[in-house]
Image (cartoon, rainbow, N blue to C red; front, side, top):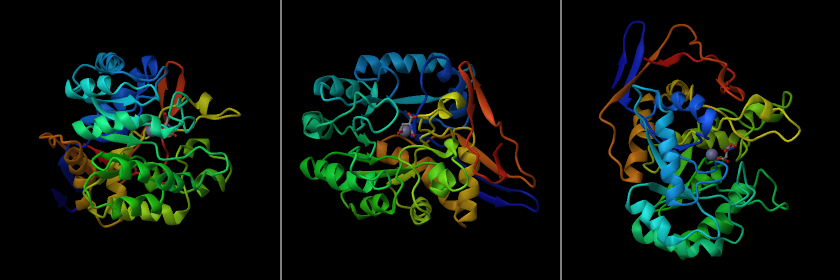
Amino acid sequence: MLSRGVMTQSLTIPRPDDWHLHLRDGDMLRAVLPETARDFGRAIVMPNISPPVRTGADAAAYRDRILAALPEGMTFEPLMTLYLTEETDPSDVAAAFETGIATAVKLYPAGATTNSAYGVKDFTKIYPVLEKCAEIGMPLCVHGEVVDNDVDVFDREAVFIDRVLDPIRQEIPDLKCVLEHMTTRDAVDYVNSSDDGLLAGTITTHHLIINRNDILAKGLRAHNYCLPVAKREEHRLALRAAAISGHPRIFLGTDSAPHTDANKFQPCGCAGIFTATVTMPLMAQIFEAEGALDKLENFASRFGPAFYGKSVHETTMTLEKQDVPVAFPKSIEAAEGPVTVFDPGYPIFWKVV
Ligand code: NCD
Ligand code: ZN
């Protein structure tokens, strides 16, 4: 519902969900979870903690730790994922899905990103588990980047689609796949060109806002560094167009990924941008700037549940445009140190009320 008064503009939508999120564990989990649970009803929780969430038992234990860390009075449903390795047991995966412990499996090419050392090198080794997933309707979430040293970091997503994702989809045509955190026109085109209804793509907060200049052109901006790395402006524009396009299998997955400032600023700094705190205000601002505020409801609250076979929340969120910039915290304090909140580089005028 859109309303435009004399002074305020507001938008009420069903409570949104985050279809790709890093919550970490322990003290960091306790620090960042409220930032997500305040605004989002559910999230697909990434399994790349250390050690990774590899079995149904791991997922059940991690889910319990997340629920135990949830502050009183907040409601939030973590949707768990299982980290695929070359040793993943198809029957354990199926049992975790059928008992509701796990919602999806996650493919990290070995070495592609934070805590991916256990990931997959030989993709044919996971075909038996993917066949099982196709049979039971369990989605495969992918970190869509190859890791070959001879492939330029800016080309790794497009090459992954050609060399890994498309062959998997050809080989196992009934498998539901999510190409997560899309960063290129190639990824958008690939999702748009699929017509079997089984391929979705998610888009993060930051990839709608930054391009590679924002990482490299005005000094090295560690807080804008994530994987897959932001690409050229033409790709950011393709993502903006995709987000407002109304395509039913393109929806929000923030990839909010907290690292302490100390871990971001070191000779080998961590990849990841922490956006949970500001995502929904930024979404309203972006969709408004695109003249597509009415499309946010589908992107943030309806298309994700439809793809994952979940119901849309009956509770709502209201966002309101303010006359003056809204103050958000610069960082969240975790026991290990501060985690900087994503700064889009411009004032934010929307807030959740
Ligand atoms: C994520 C993290 O920190 O866990 N980092 C990131 O840059 N997005 C991992 C991931 O999703 O690639
Ligand atoms: Zn991620």
